[in-house]
Amino acid sequence: MKRTVWIAAAVVLVLAGAGYFWWSSLHEDDAKELVLYGNVDLRQVELAFNNSERIAAVLVQEGDRIRKGQILARLDTARLEPRLAQVEAQAAAQRQVVQRLRNGSRPEEIAQARANIESARAEVVNARLQHERLQSAAQISAGRAVRQQDVDNAKAALQVAEAKLTVNQRALELSVAGPRREEVAEAEARLRAGEAEAALLRQQLADSQLIAPVDAVVRTRVMEPGEMASPQKSVFSLAITDPKWVRVYVAEPDLGKIRPGMMAAVAVDSFPNRRFEGWVGFISPVAEFTPKSVHTEELRTTLVYEVRVFVKDPEDNLRLGMPATAYLPLDRADKENGRQGDKKNPDMKVVRESTGNWQRSEGMKVMENWIQTGDKIDAVVANNDEMAIGAIMALEAAGKLNDVVVAGIDGTPDALEYVKSGKLKVSAFQDPMGQGKKSIEMAIQAAKGEKLADKYVWVPFELITQENVDTYIEKWKSAGAN
Image (cartoon, rainbow, N blue to C red; front, side, top):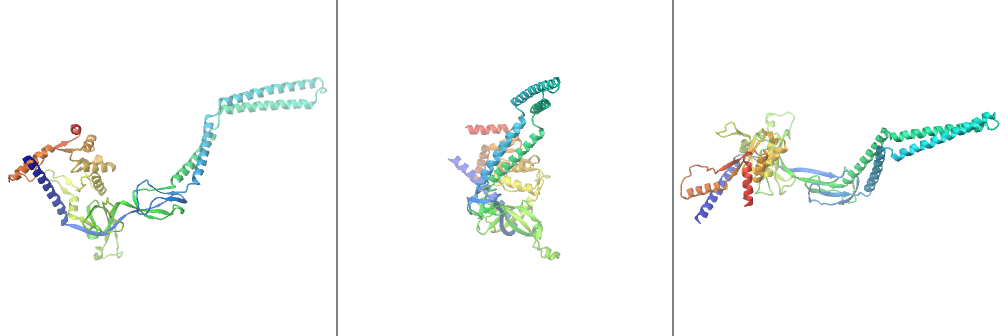
């Protein structure tokens, strides 16, 4: 029973200490902040069909949430489908023509050409004999037994037979040689033209379905079934709910206090007790609302610059045009803009610090923001492996992973695989037995009224590297088996 009490006391002390440091870290940032006012903004898409045809069906309503790839509307395809079938049939016929030309003459066709030559040669022999007989008879009878016309007809028949023989010989040569290259090329070009026309019609048939390009919300349903659609007429107006930002304006004297990637909080009147997390994503290089082209020193201080404070709104509570207030902690900005390391590492510079809420997705977003700032970052240290893995994913997508060392804490199964691959350089195994022992020792000292030797009591951690990661993988496997 006493042991249970001591363990409970240790847990209370640990949670109380963690709560104190969390509360103090939050209230440190409240000391100084820049307050800016603006409106919620987001991207919009005017979605239209690529084809000009009558609308057959509209499948969504205003306010519907749609997913990328979802079918929103359809066109009438009663005329397009038969046209596609016709063109595909023509292309199939031309494909056979090309195949026939490539194959050349069949053996039977060559054999037939040779047989035609033999037939023509026989006719030549017969015509020559007939001509010789008539010519001989005419010579012997001095033209009395045979008319000269008969001799001339026999001679002409011989010449015709010889010409037929030549024609059949050339026909055999053509059959053996096959079609000309130009004929094959022409047939192939006609086939490509037919296939291209079929591909165009297939694309038009696919375009008869209006597909959602992104996840969004339908703001306006502009057209209805029966109306004639065209690429110039929008069917829907879509609102993209991620990302969202607050468009605010900062005066020139405050411009130097902010920078891209700087953390922020956003508040709106509809949720008075809530602040949405955000960050500075864009600062306009051009001043707006300039009163004159030539400014006095006094007027120059009234120039304002557009700033976009991107905001996290997973529940989609913020609406387009909603008035909003952005809070930018300036002391945190100073901290993010760089500070030197501790006494042991005086040359180390802490470029940026931010919370990733212990989540992989949040760690990825934070790293993406840091990459956009253009700061030179040599190493990233995360307070747990999930945020470290998120940072690795962002660095890998940007092609910068080989230039940055990433470290995490926890030694989770996913992290161990990243360590094994070399993407996560180190992690730390939190020994639960060691942590429990230290917590109990501290609780006992506190219960006895003894003063702790140090302000911070470090629990034992074990460094995990690529050299010893297999040992910890086996530990997880053993724990899972038990």
